[in-house]
Image 1 (tube, rainbow, N blue to C red):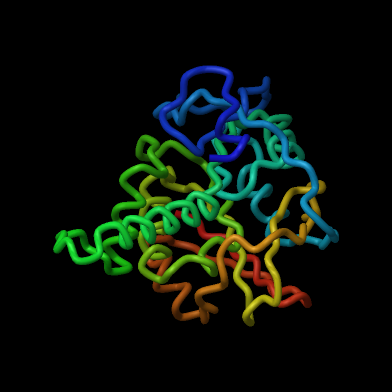
Image 2: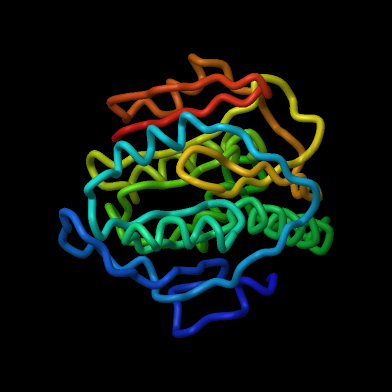
Length: 250
């Protein structure tokens, strides 16, 4: 467990979760959803080199969230203070859960468990689908329809297909009707590993970071549509840097 998950201001609902405090907001307000968990995370410092890119997908996301008031947002990447602060200033309650880091730790424990149980004849389902189901038993534990928006980043490219499918299904359950998912997809296998944080309302910072998990799959349009088949709208923006920004509206 990293430092982010050890530091907490009050009791939470489980590990690997952080929630930024509610800030004052104007505009339209909505009834409070199921509690996503009252834990606050700490800021991350820059891990390595970074560059800034214009993000039409971010602009579209903000347009869809405009006037929401006291909304809720789930960030499934690293908890950067710049990203948390950006949405807090707009009146959002922000929860952060670094799923890819949790997945890496989970796989390491699974491998150790497999070595220990070799030859014992245990009946644990070691298939990719079985691993994904066990992972979800202790992750993304929020009330249904808790969030107005989810930052998925390029998470799906690094998860096993079975895990990616289950992740999209769980995120869909957590999203309110009319909620928005912001995701990134690589058009070819990435040469390195990157993290993302919001620079301003028009751009993202792309941060080169140590590899957590190798890329598992490069999704084609039809495969993406199948993954998000329960969403009524999909809008994509293709950049020159081999990244496709996509918004899904439930």
